Image (cartoon, rainbow, N blue to C red; front, side):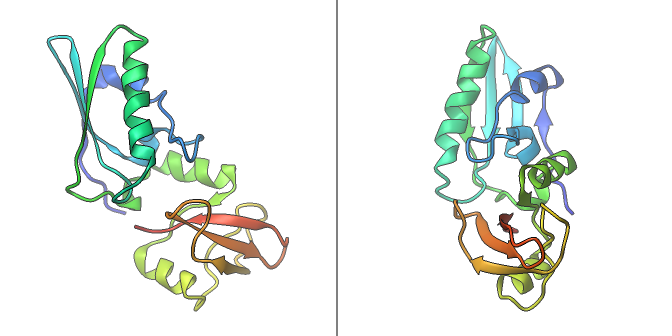
Length: 165
């Protein structure tokens, strides 16, 4: 897993840690790795975020939620969307991956394994309900474009898989 360097002022982390991903509420924007920079100068907080994919509708909500979180503590926040470098699932923290699994969404694999799993060539996506690897792709697309729908052949439960990006 590669990690992209973040520049986040330590005192801003507790506030940013209260902002959840609107599509996966058990993940904070810090867990997702979308916050690239956070600084404060002359009483104004400047936050740079990277979308999980181009055109992600959640980014507007995330931006609004960041502004709201800082306004609740008497701070003005300006949110800027940055597109480069592009976000990757490698930026999801270990805590975020664990939270995904506990929530019932299989965490992303690496790029090569992801391709094999989504093409049905290998059964390597672990069921977050029972832990079985005896799973199958039901649909390349789940409730959002970044997820696929799988089914466990052992416990018969459907589940979503967060695709590797």
